[in-house]
Every structure is written in structure tokens, then in C-alpha cells.
Length: 127
Image (cartoon, rainbow, N blue to C red; front, side):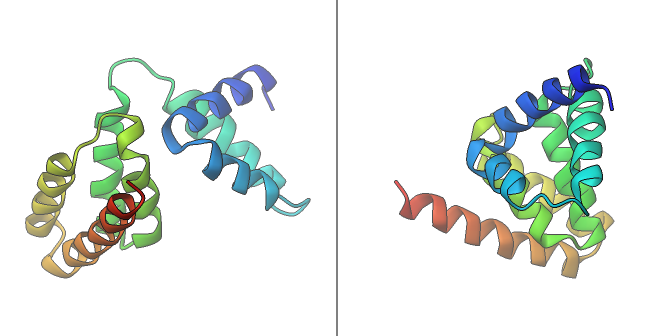
């Protein structure tokens, strides 16, 4: 593992997902899943999310579309919760999900719309 890339990745991961999320992932890391967590930190965050060319907001919108297409609603919620950290607006989310409705199907988009409403309700209640 490249420790420098991993540490850079963890810093980006904290900026995008927040300390609470990253700390929770650290608390649930075991000997079994440690290599996977290191892979995520080093390659997902330290390599891919650190690349120039696409800003974090755009990367999150791409992820929302792909995760909707894959039916990964729990992962969709992670990026919805991260949205305010990276300038992703509710209007952005709506437009991404409208796009997925046509290209991925109404049921896939409907699941993500439900997830978005749930996250937005939680965020509004916390204000």
C-alpha cells in the first residue's frame, strides 16, 4: 500500500463524506475487511477522487447515476448525505435522477427518489 496516497485519500474521503462517516468505517474495520478499506482509501479516494479534470460535485453526480442504475440505494444515500459538503444541490440530485429514469428505468429512479426524500427529510429535521 502506498501510505502517502492512502493518507491523501482519507483526507479527501473526510472532506466529501464527513468525519462521522469515515470514523464509523474505521470503527468497523476488522482484520478481515482491512485490506478492502485500504483499497478504498488508496485507490477510490487517493487516486480516482484526487484526479484533476472533474470536480467533486460532478463526480458525485456521476456516482448517483451509476449507483441508481445498479440499484445500490444505500450507497446512493451516502452521496446524498455528502452533497452539501461538495456543492451538490437538491436541484442537481433531481436532474440526475430524472436522467436515470429514462436511461436506467423508472423503478431504479423511484428507489433513488425515495432515498433522496428520506435523506432530505433527515437533513431538514436536523436544521
